Length: 418
Image 1 (cartoon, one colour):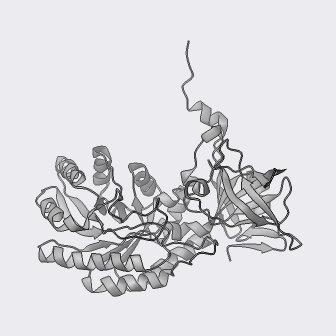
Image 2 (cartoon, one colour):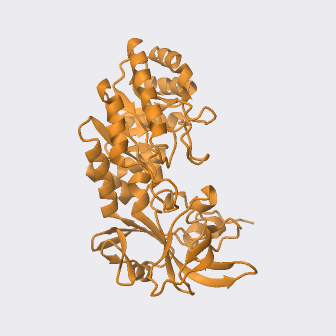
């Protein structure tokens, strides 16, 4: 196990979380290099008999050390902005292993990506492919393209993270794909090479994936019959993790990969996979210190020093995250708490009516499975410092992003002059 108790103290690999909190200060994120390596190895091995490339979805956690760790293992990258593209390149991901997704690519972003020679643009609309054609021609090159197809599949996930339904902003309609590919093929700056889909995030069943893969297979056959050289199938990401909320456990990486290769293997295409959460989600915790225990009229509040600006998922998605004390309690007694932060918003809460051991001021808690969509979504709301990030690798530990304090934040502003 990556996060487990040694005696009465929670450890990440071989490092005490409590000792880390004394040296780093709270709140802070802590990541396990071992957990990230293990998750990547499962994808690599599960797709081992196919021509497959794991392109890490950088949006899940864009820390340079995390991207660099995965790059060193052989991962590519799935990026959705020029900033993420730059992060991936500077972290050591080879340009020809980078896929550029996103619905609003601008001409300067396209130019930057083309100049670096990325593997593929996942194009999401006809206006985008026309602009990409113009940019490519201005550089005397051709852009490698896969259209992202919206297959109108219900992924049975949270409405804010489903992306493959007809009402979502992503991709081009399945029903219009053949004609869109035909028009794109006439553009001299475009080189069609693939098909892309991504139907959502935190999927906990294989059925929606199966539908999407079957769409891939059928469309690939139709497009090849129409004369398009389809050699790449980008099947997206979205495989969920177990947040400990008692809901359906996600399918295994091995079952997911087995189904994908069973359906798509006969097409003799390179398969791109874009996992994010399932690579880094379980590899991270957010450590926070109890400031006060407050008894309200009907609720007991555990007020901690992390807030919704540090970790937005519970407020944004009503997401459940397991919360455990850093010091294991010596008795089985439990109490109900609302675990809340210091931000001036009622929505600043990590849990409601959560059973926890009796807690006191200065106790430490760990919010689990916070390695994905945690620090990367943080803000400076209420002028709160950005929490640092720590990477642990066996006995070694290092701060991979320092705390950004109020002085530095305020220094970014231009003072008023009179």
